[in-house]
Length: 138
Image 1 (cartoon, one colour):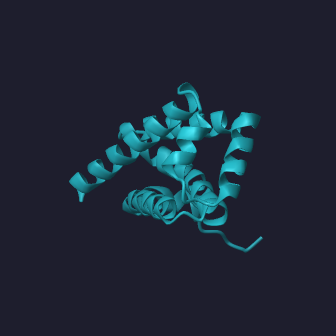
Image 2 (cartoon, helix red, strand yellow; image 1 turned 90 degrees about the vertical axis):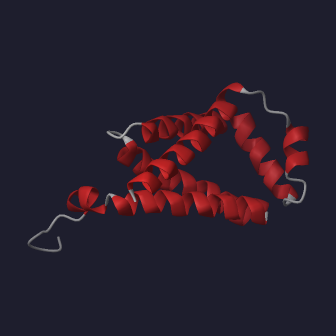
């Protein structure tokens, strides 16, 4: 399982470092983007253009890059995995509700599953912090 953890970590790290660098440093060309996913719902491209024009994708790209870098190091990969959960869920739900493009949905679902595998592998490390025993409900 240790080798599988390393492979999953570095695969996710490479994916998110690349995605973050792409959003932060490569120029956005809508025509190329639309050609790559021509079968996606047209409302997705309107939504993506809105996010791009508002500058929100720089925020997403920054956190993709940070999470990818955190996944590289053994000491910080648990934090990177925890930070990736809401990020991947947002990506997945964007494709479920806007693009409706099955390859994007499958890709994001696989990324979420791989991230959850990493989190469940370290369950004993984060479980006491999130689920502390208490004397009462309030």
